[in-house]
Length: 262
Ligand code: ADP
Ligand code: MG
Image (cartoon, rainbow, N blue to C red; front, side, top):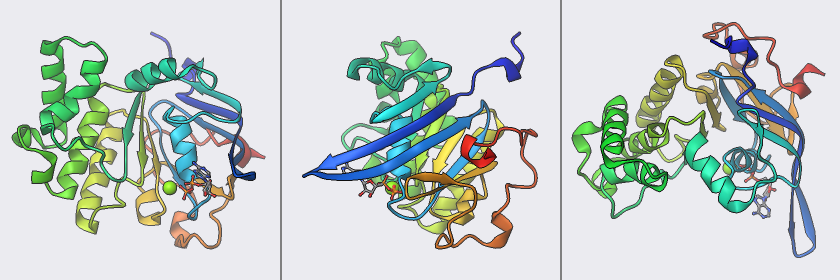
């Protein structure tokens, strides 16, 4: 067996930039980003509105590509893949959880979770098994035949989590997964993510809410498109959240981001 420490990081970004050009205006959304996320880590990314969180997560999720720099996913350079190759890697290696759930309204809960597996060409029997298991994991198996509109927001997000985990991706990416939920449902979704993490999932979550950032094992702060060592002042982070969490599941303090190590 290969020791865990010899495996490449799930995510490795080096000198990554993203520049949006519209009507001759250049927005430098991301500048010189260097981040590593190891297998089994739970990392949060936070920072004020407009600092580049969603841009970063879209690039990590292969929904967008960087302007320059390197992105290695599970040891493989993916920054210059063609669109169809990106779609394939995304389908197999990434589980994405959106703020607005993004379930398909006229498909049942079961079919929503099944769809990415169908795109992958998985046989019906294995699909059924994977979908059933994923729905059981999130406590939604009893709603398999419902339509998304027949569920509460919290339940819809649980289904979206099932869809993200069903394909056994190498990483789960979540962009403000509690943003559209009341605090009770939000907390339940956070507990679900934490449970997945305890069972070995690698998670990268964007949140502007420090209460949720504390669920993660390591926090990365963005400000004006750059990784900064400390939370920016206008991010209202209570003092206790300013250091990394006291009891990470595995002691891996050596895995700082490149910028934080400077
Ligand atoms: P956050 O998620 O932290 O609020 P974003 O990643 O959405 O921030 O945006 C970062 C910056 O990039 C902002 O200045 C935003 O206006 C700009 N931006 C994001 N997407 C686009 C786009 N498609 N075209 C032009 N500018 C964009
Ligand atoms: Mg955003």
